[in-house]
Image (cartoon, rainbow, N blue to C red; front, side, top):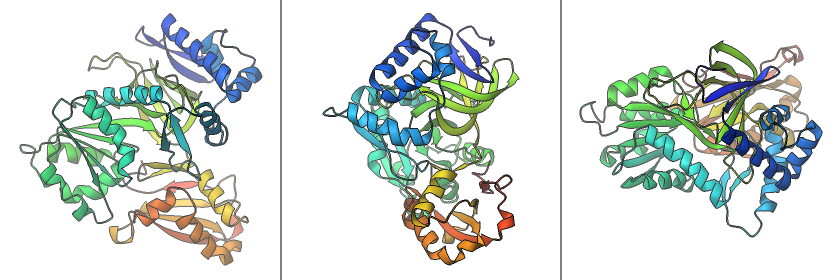
Length: 436
């Protein structure tokens, strides 16, 4: 039992789930599992194979169900949702680089509103007020960020602006001075490059920015401190993924992202206790708030810390802190790329590719923000042109990062003894700000 009475950790062997200690939560989880059994052939089979039913203890049923993988999301849950939403209105969000090819997350209106409610809570916790000017600094298409603008407008923001960044940061961030935003949302990898050009726009006494919100990646503590000191504003993390949507956000205490287990229920694999009410492990997420393309114990690819100890801010909700990515994934311009997805993309062009190692390091702006070196067996040297073509043009989202000037590629061909698959590190991230 944790130090509070409202939530508690439940063990499933070596795993733990953080659940709400109430009949209401159990009833909600039962309804969720029942809906999946009735509407998803995939999860109906999962329940049957696990030997559990929604009429059983729902928390025990949750523990008995296996993890949902990225491949199952792409190959099974997406087609199921598309079929279920036939002739119904829905929105579609592009998946990130964790899948080799573009996959859509489909949202019926009730799903869109549920996710918007989570986002509004995060924005309010970060200090967004009525009358604020909200600016998104991004490299993607503006339509993606209309969702955040709707949440901000619903909270009373008077103006919302999309400021598109390019590899010419000095020019693309210049309008920020005239916009004078109160709340800024962006990715740490973009802020790292933009910061030298905007840090001196204002002093702490004249800076209009009250809240800086970052999402998609971990923000290096050094950069966080610089933003706080130079602008005199609060800095807040917004945790979520493309597939599950937003999950939670930090308060002023900056000790984890508050989230609601009644909306998104977390499970930690091989959870390590770090103290009373604190566990750490690879996190799987169950999306109780979604009706279509909902997921049970979805493997997002992050190691996280769950903390149910009281927060000094007084918010009773537990907190999630990002610790690190699992060793087969990395972040680039806010998109999460999996080793398996990149390997799949290369194999589609050069079937002889069986394994590789990916190295990431900072590069100068003139050469791109990240240098990605792909190490391969020397027997593939004759396929170098095809492999480079695949990296530049045939892997979803990685191609966009390349053509936007945010990543450059290099190939390295090594003798076979360098590729002992039992020892080889799939991803080696040496970047100062993102390799933490």
